[in-house]
Image (cartoon, rainbow, N blue to C red; front, side, top):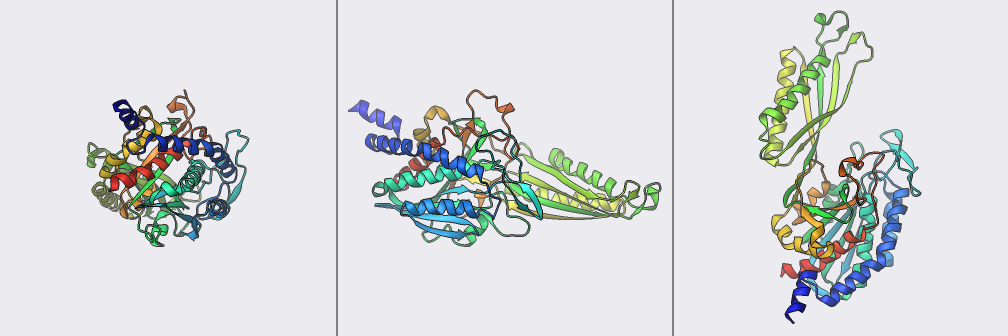
Length: 428
C-alpha cells in the first residue's frame, strides 16, 4: 500500500492512478488531430483583428463538442464554456490566434503562401510566432475535457484571443478589448492559465518563472523639429538628424547609467527613423519610433520620465524642439507566486519533472499580462525546438525561418488538462 501511494504521488499530486491513465489515453487520442489542426491553421494564417476564418474554424469545432460558444468577442475572438459535472471554481485557458506580416522561407508541405492587406500595403502572412500551435493545443484540450465532463470539478472557460501581436493602426483589440467586453466575468474567472510555444527551447520541455516573467512593451515616438537649410550650409539651420543621433545616444545612457539593472533589465530600441527627401537638404523635421521593455513597473515609469527629459533637453541645447509620446501596449506578464507554487507540481506531473524548470525573465512581451489584473495568472513556455538542435542556431520568433517541431504538442494538452483538475482541489 505504501508503494502504491508513493507511485500515485510521483504520477500526479492530485489525480488518482485510474484518472491519470484515462487522461493519458484521451490526450493520446487527440494527438494526431492537434498536429493536423496546427498545420491546417499554419497554412492559412490571418493577421490581427482579421482572424475570420480561424475563428469560424475554432467555433465550429467547439460547437461540435456541445460547448456553449460565443463568437465576435473582442472583434473576432471565440469563448466557450464547459460546465463540469462537479462543483468547483472557474478556470480559464487562453490561446492567441493571430499571425504576422512575415514571409515564410522554410520549405514545408504546409508552408503559408497567403498574403493580406496591412496598413494599406499587401504583405505576406505567416504564423511566425507559433499561435497556430496554441490554437490547436487549446482545441485538443477542449476535446479531452469535454469527454471527461462528468469528472470535471467546476467550469472551464476556453478563450481564443485575437490580436495578441497588437491591433492594426488605431483599432482596439487583443486581451484589453476582450476584458472590456467581459471575458473574465459571467462566470467570473478564479484563475487563468496560458502557454506559448518556443522555438529555442527543446521539444517537450516546459519552463516558467514565478513573479515578473515577461516585459512590459511600450512604443514611443519622438518628433524632432529643427530648421531646414542647404546641406552645404549647416550653420544656417538646425539639423534634426544630428539632434536625433544625440537623443538616441542619450537614451542608451538611461539604460547603462540611470537604471538599476541589478533589480531588473531595461531595453530601449529605436527601430524606425524617417526624415528628409534629398541628400543635400537638411530637413526641418525627423520622426523616430521604437520600443521600451521593462520588468518592473516603477522602473518603467522612471524610464518614461527620463526619456522625455533627455529628448527635450538635448533638443533645446541645439535650438531644436522634441516631443515624446509613449503608448503602453502590454504590462509586465506577472505569474502570481502563490498560484505558481500551487500549480507547478501539476505541470511537473503532466510533462515529467525532468522536463520542467524555472527560467530567467525575458524581454519579450505578451498581452496575456492584462488577464492577470482580473484573476491570478500563470503563463508558461512549451518547447518546440527539434531534439539535438543548438538553441543559438534555432530561428527566433517573428522571423522568416521560424520553425516548430509539432510532434509533442500533446504535452501542452496534458498540462492544460492537469491544471484544470488540480486547481479545483488546491482551491479548496
